[in-house]
Amino acid sequence: AQSVTQPDIHITVSEGASLELRCNYSYGATPYLFWYVQSPGQGLQLLLKYFSGDTLVQGIKGFEAEFKRSQSSFNLRKPSVHWSDAAEYFCAVGARDMRFGAGTRLTVKP
Amino acid sequence: DTAVSQTPKYLVTQMGNDKSIKCEQNLGHDTMYWYKQDSKKFLKIMFSYNNKELIINETVPNRFSPKSPDKAHLNLHINSLELGDSAVYFCASSRGQGIGGELFFGEGSRLTVL
Image (cartoon, rainbow over all chains, first blue to last red; front, side, top):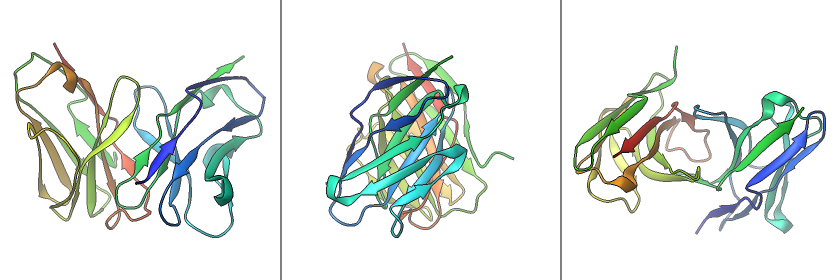
């Protein structure tokens, strides 16, 4: 069965610092992988997705993620975090029925 | 123009009552979903409809009944509400049967059962 693990419940970084959010997945075939962001009181918005091809994918708002099949990981990165990036981040895997990780809450210190 | 809209945004009700949440999408998508997000932010799929046909029905109490009058609408009716039903319910849609496709989410409907 497909599943997603986000090991970090809460991460705090300083504005301008780099960011990496971890995601590990379990999936029987080539996975469809996604990162979504949820701002307070809002729905989820897609940041980026991976289906096949180049393992480094670029998304919106300066985010990127790297698919590593050998590690079953799809970590999200951003070189320089902005205060507006504070939100909840969800990794997801799946085809017809998308499964979400438990989320990582990002706090940005001034 | 809101792509996926849900109403109401907030619901406060007593245990035992029945309530409905409505969802509409104007994206022309074929597939719609209901997700439940609990107090720990965990998102769990409940139902999925493709062209008005139920294709995913997770282990959800039968007090929850989805209805899709057409492919642009997916409503959720909940009977005999319980405290544990308190959550944020998200409607989403995708193109096709959602195979590898992006989900577009509504803003959520926060249900509080007292």
